[in-house]
Every structure is written in structure tokens, then in C-alpha cells.
Length: 200
Image 1 (cartoon, rainbow, N blue to C red):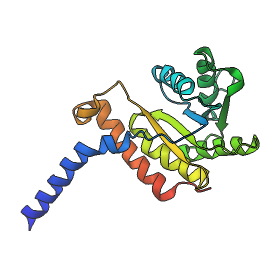
Image 2 (tube, helix red, strand yellow):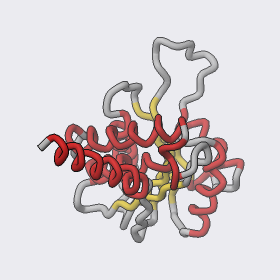
Image 3 (tube, rainbow, N blue to C red):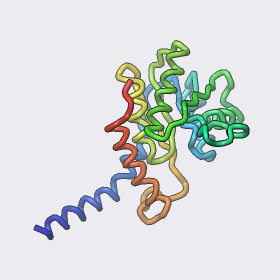
Image 4 (cartoon, rainbow, N blue to C red):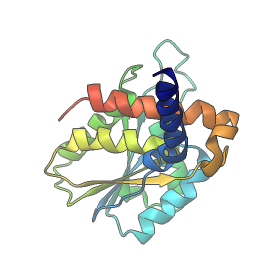
């Protein structure tokens, strides 16, 4: 029995290693007129985000993110949503089509809370989008997708766009320190969002 259990654990580990990254780093667009960009993503992902906006013929780009920790110095801190919106404006996204949607600072269910702030902004503007695509970084995509589906509910189709990370090879993530940090972390974050995420 011990050998069987060890064999099953070994098979499960191999399957996890081989298939978890493509499962997490998913891209599946929907027909959408609103694009959301997660404000915390690294700067090298912003040119593809600007290209996605232009080529996808979206009417509005919303940038999500959390406000800064109130315990930190607020005099020079710029929330991720505002910083990223400014950078996207520099990359050619028209200011009239671009809005930052900073959410209150949080340490638990952060993606869920930023998704709800985006939904609140959409409601505040009186919009009824035919669909929303959300752009994020690598294996964070699966968690983000679930969070925005929870926030927008069944009436608004939600798609997801994963921009590949450059700090580890996706097909050999388990051989790289950064991959070993982020892929399991994003898997756990996805599970947390599925189990505890805030529903609309």
C-alpha cells in the first residue's frame, strides 16, 4: 500500500508540474467593449496592454489596483491604478477612454476587492458592457478571471488575457527560483478566490 500511495503522489506531482502553468496562465477573450488592466503588473506588460486596447477596438480601459497602505507615507506614494493609467496614457491610450479605479487598501482577497471596485465604477458610469476582458500577468490569470466573474455575475461575459512573465521560463517553471515562488502562490490564490471570493 505504501508503494501504491507513493506512486500516486508521484504521478500527481508530475501532472501538477506539467499542467498547472498552462491552467493558470490562461487566455480566453470574450466579445468585449471594456478592457481592464491590473495596475500592479510590471511595466514591460503595458505596451501589449495598449496594443490590446487599440486592436481590440475597446471603448473604455479601466485600471484596477489597491490604494496604498495607510501606514505608509502618503505624500509621495502613487496608487498602482493611477501610476499604470498614467503610463498607458503615455503609450497612446486616449485620456478620455482611460480611468483608474483604485480600491481601498486590503491584505485579504485583494484581487476580489479590486474587481468589485471596477464593477462599482462601471455601475457609477451607468454602463452596460457587452463584455469585459481583463489583462493580467502570467499565472495570476486564473485567479483574476474567477474574481471578475464573481464581481460581474452572470449578466456580463468576462474574458481573461495573460501576458507572459519574463522572469522564468513557463515550460520549465519548476527549475527556476522565481517560478517556484510564483506558480504555487498563484495556484493557492486561485483556490482561495474560488472558495472565499466576494460574489456580486
